[in-house]
Image 1 (cartoon, helix red, strand yellow):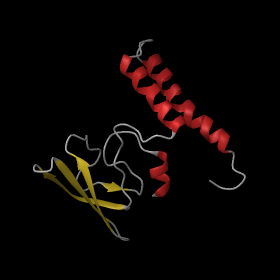
Image 2 (spheres, rainbow, N blue to C red):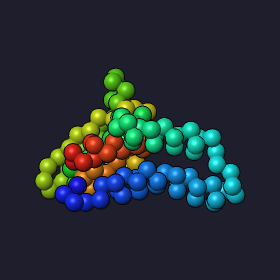
Image 3 (spheres, rainbow, N blue to C red):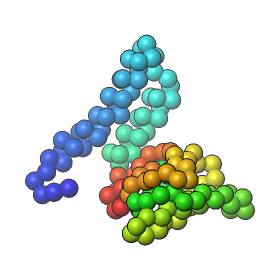
Image 4 (cartoon, rainbow, N blue to C red):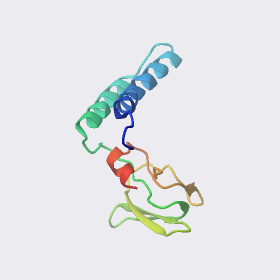
Length: 127
């Protein structure tokens, strides 16, 4: 965030986006929003307002590059995702039950989500 930037406007847009998406989803499904849309959307807005860590947080990469391997470790019930780029390498431990958004060979940018879930804004800014 730069000095003089309209942070209030950015915050309002961030808060309004989930509501807009819910409205659009309702429109495209013939006026029917599922309970999960509503019950999952409201806690996310609350997480943003309270600056809490989101439930089901996505694992994000700090390295721009290629996913070179995804290994499962049954003993620890985790997966390890390996990303190799020109500026370095990254190894990310992911819960075994997490839904992956990437596959071996995919190109990823810094801050890209490797798993499904909400991205913590503070964590994204650190990357």
